[in-house]
Length: 74
View 1 (cartoon, one colour):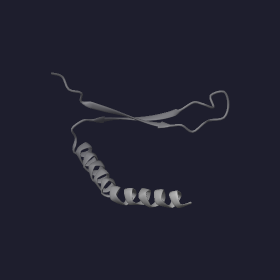
View 2 (cartoon, rainbow, N blue to C red):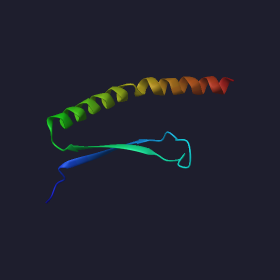
View 3 (cartoon, one colour):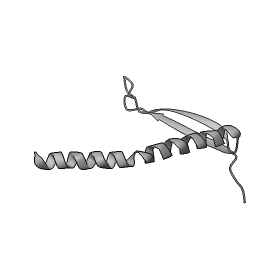
View 4 (tube, rainbow, N blue to C red):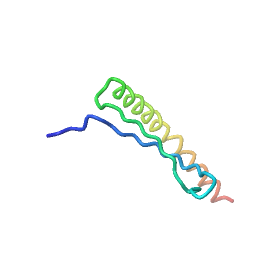
């Protein structure tokens, strides 16, 4: 079985430009090797960030309930 050794990451920037290609999308890309220490550290950072955001779900749900109650009274 073959595995990929490189990861292509695309970063799309949808800022419009002036002129004929005003709807053009600028893109940047990076090519990185899979399995490096840096990649694993980035994954760990992303996991931590996602876990922190998931920890806030209770607050979001409470706020939605609060807003829902305010809108029903109004």
